Length: 111
Image (tube, rainbow, N blue to C red; front, side):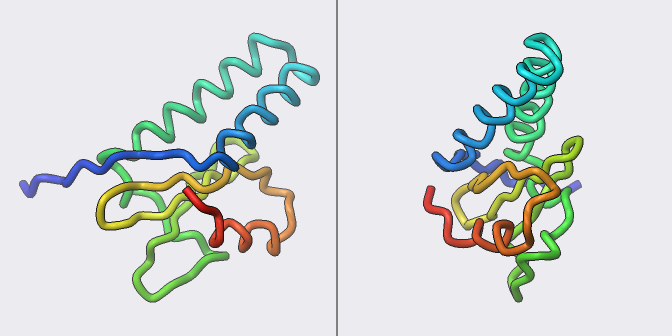
């Protein structure tokens, strides 16, 4: 069995702000415990990318020849990340109801 290369996982400041906003919205809407549990699931998905970065599908809104943009569906949220030669960059964590333009805007997110 081939060894899978481990890559460092980093979050953009936009992704960190997105997760904070998700927690605030969840706490106001569903309660503190439910919000904390959901955000924990989001972080588990993100930190699992160190070895499983190729497990998730290519983001259909950010198609490229070298297939560097992928996404994870977590509840009603889309975790968008980019695979580079050295690391996995989590760009945004967006509600799936946002416009396609905002999803495509993740491409220019700096890490």
